[in-house]
Length: 116
Length: 116
DNA sequence: TTGTTATGTAACTTATTGGTTACTCATTAC
DNA sequence: GTAATGAGTAACCAATAAGTTACATAACAA
Image 1 (cartoon, protein in one colour):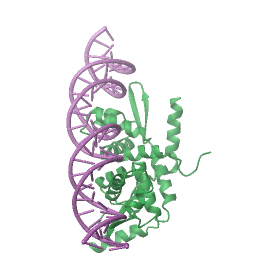
Image 2 (cartoon, rainbow over the protein chains, first blue to last red; image 1 turned 180 degrees about the vertical axis):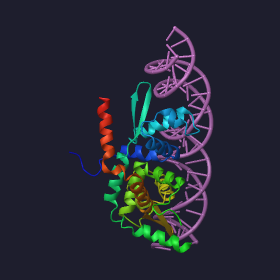
Image 3 (cartoon, chains in turn blue, green, brown, cyan; image 1 turned 90 degrees about the vertical axis):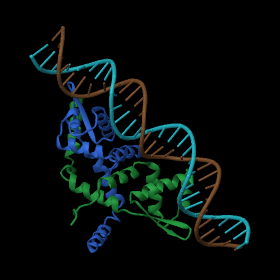
Image 4 (spheres, rainbow over the protein chains, first blue to last red; image 1 turned 30 degrees about the vertical axis):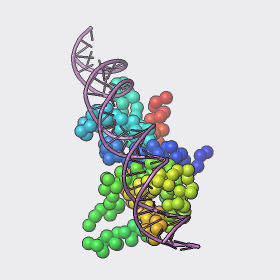
């Protein structure tokens, strides 16, 4: 049995963060999340990129585990997968819980409030 | 009044995820986190990269807000800043809380099963 | 079977990243 | 004042990323 919190290796983290470090990719991910089972053309229709460009982004998202794709006939249906996000989320909760006590955010918010 | 959960814009997210998408940078961040107030040479001593290479990485981390640096005399002291991580953490908690209950893990499993 | 749809591959261009060495500038120590 | 230390800049190189067009393949529909 593997570690309960989040067993991602460093290479997987690279892939995940790299996939997330792009506005188009995050937008694509959002489209897929809201339309589970959609296909490549459906996603392409939401953007001004070429189909190939979108496909490459989807490949990156899939390599990161954020999208799961499934070939059915001539279509490739796409599904959002939250598991990698969940793992990092848990990991951060564990690792930075000392910092997590909302002290900083509260400080930041109050600073911003005072600024207004 | 801005959004309560975590008001990061898309460009800031790009910077943050890009900064995190590198094993050397994550390692550097860890060094700084464990040795608050250390300087560039201290960090450099932990790696096999050149000082300039480390400096560039630190610049990326600082642009992402993950490191705060402070010039004192001829030294630049470095501090880890958890706020950006915390903001994303909160953001994910809000945005994906529906998925957080292991439902998605089940979807993933069923998709994988269907594939067999 | 023939045309259309959905996807995939190849090859290419441009920009960005990740790293280096060489040099400069500012500060501290002696 | 001079030497050593810590940091920053400039210029360069190789590899990767991000996008394109052109072509190829596979499946569905008529």
